[in-house]
Image (cartoon, rainbow, N blue to C red; front, top):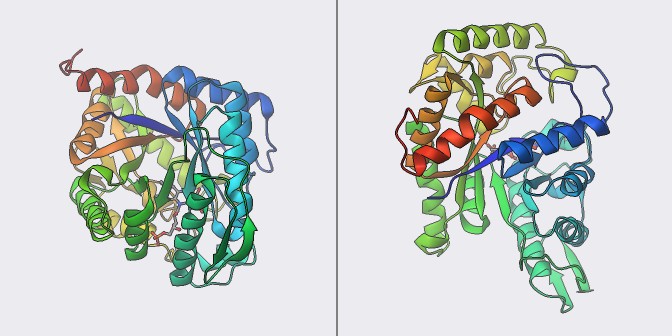
Length: 365
Ligand SMILES: Cc1cc2nc3c(=O)[nH]c(=O)nc-3n(C[C@H](O)[C@H](O)[C@H](O)COP(=O)(O)O)c2cc1C
């Protein structure tokens, strides 16, 4: 099974462990970071969306212009853009990047966050709108013949798309852990994104996604590819890695209420999205799960986005990733807490090691 690696994009040197309040886009940093991902052997980088953060489309276009390999994954909330506009914008960047664009759909995990940009639909409706949105984009990418749409959330007449994707379509990713995420992602997505849970829980989620794909009539060879996300904390030895993990945790705790350290302050209230709720529940059952999946980073940030760490030497991180590959995860997202340096380290010590093991080399090669 081919395994590919995903990173996340940062537009400046601010991190969760060393936040720079109010930092603007740093074009030099962004270009250096994007090229470092290319050199490290990453296949994709997520350009995330948040109501108070930089525009992922412009970030993706910049990445595409200065790299050769890495594919920008543009995070998109349907409430922020009319679907015909999104179809053209994504296809335009796809043409600029010679066919490297992926779109990651976010139904919206928090009513409060959605309201900041005028979206007052409840979560059930947000998922229903997402389903319609994906169908429109797929239709708009399929050919430039004019078509009408008369749906529940969108109606338009005689739209014809003159901007078609390079490879016939643009891969669609869906993320989430609620029943509706499984149903819609299982039925319509090429890629399904998960946060790093223990092996047992990850397997349960994969089974749910595959069951939804089966129920939608997709054949077994056309199921969504599974993407799973970790925040590896890596050092030369196990001991050094655990010391680094505790230093990282101290810094996360110190920055807990700093809005510049992440999307929203971790304030102890239960997040509305199921993915975060699941992580917080698992965190209550223990700090370390399986080989090296570490949860205090989840508790510290109130499960703010992908927050489970993998802690250890390169060998432990490689072995842990391979456990997930064995479960059927094909897309492995690894981003650290020291964004730039961690990406470089993963390129040296993790990505080549995973590829070598999959090509048949032993653990010490
Ligand atoms: C891999 C992955 C990446 C995500 N990226 C974003 C993002 O960039 N912005 C955002 O608001 N939510 C992001 N999310 C969050 C979910 O899409 C969001 O919580 C979802 O809309 C509702 O989640 P639920 O179905 O688990 O309740 C991401 C989720 C996953 C699994």
